[in-house]
Image (spheres, rainbow, N blue to C red):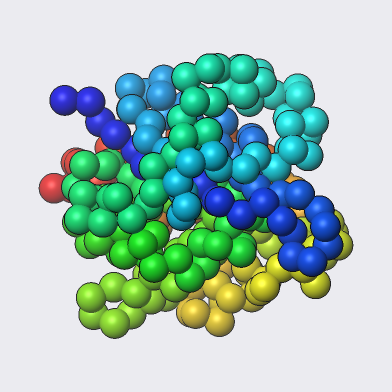
Length: 236
């Protein structure tokens, strides 16, 4: 039986009221997707609205020297999948089909995945079913409102990372996003960690929760998801 991983991409393509285009960040989908496919996983793509998930066009240029990302963007099968995503709501009650739920970044998730009811349900149920939950860069915003059956937030007391407030300020978008990710994680009682310098790679695994800080973290993030899945099976 093929092992499956669900990638949940954003459906949002506008950066606040700036007029700037946004969406999912190429490297943060392509690197973990490529790595996990090499480990034998089948990748399924979903988004809140279904259909075409918007790619942050600026991220194409940023990843021009990254072979995995260039190959992913040129792969017709992958492009068909991201242009024809399932609705996340299709997977409510089907969480056991997947080894992991993965939320890549880009600024898009900040606008539509923080409070998406279907995504929150799928994530909570997957985690409580013993699955891995993973998010990179801005993706961890999708974990912040996940509440478990005992009424606690998923991230409370957990070691996590994500796009730092310093990095958000460095790209001058702190006033465009609805909330600062690092700040919200800390407010919820998560133990937030970051690289020694902005833009440095940082991946944090806390049991079955895997998070990465930024685009540079994407390759390590992919490998850490695989390792967490293996560990989850070993602990059953």
